[in-house]
Image (tube, rainbow, N blue to C red; front, side, top):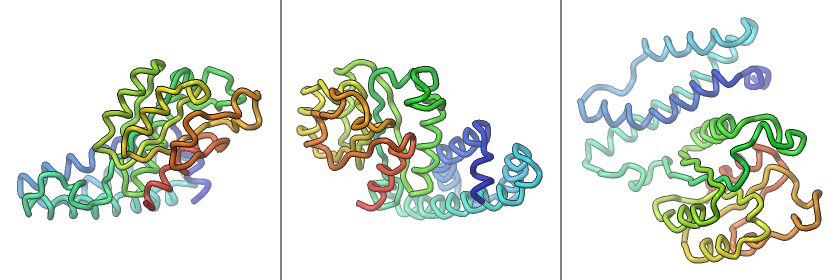
Length: 238
């Protein structure tokens, strides 16, 4: 299975993330129309389409992986269906594991894949966001990923985070300079986990101090994209 996961390219990740993003909308539409939530024929078509993207020797593993994803999808759709039939206006607020996490990428992270790939890796921001969405779904979470080079915009995103279960914040260069971000985090009730792709403590001395760390729930650094995934693991348990 590890080999199958490693073999998934951006085309598969895109399909994977797209299916997750549509899951709740599909469930809502089916609930409103009174239709069932399981469509085996369409799911088999998706399995065949995805399996065709990888080497033949890995197709069985990939089908198994996607079957697991679809099973989770059907479970969540049934939960939404039941809540909607009971008149719940907001299924997420009613206790489903569809809680939203706000993921904020700070300045220069739009250049991922181009900027210092030896430090930040070769994945683009789009690929990173797809990986984050995929992992979030496996945990019963959903993500809203945003990037800004503007300090004030990031402050505004934090201030408007009331609807979110938590915030994953890579403040990038603002980590070491922004009193405004620190004050915004302190001003809201939404818990924040600070993340960094690189190991900031193994880099220049000025990167060793974080102004926002004291007001965050925790910090994850140096794991590449895994820093974001570890933060999602935390929010899935709180």
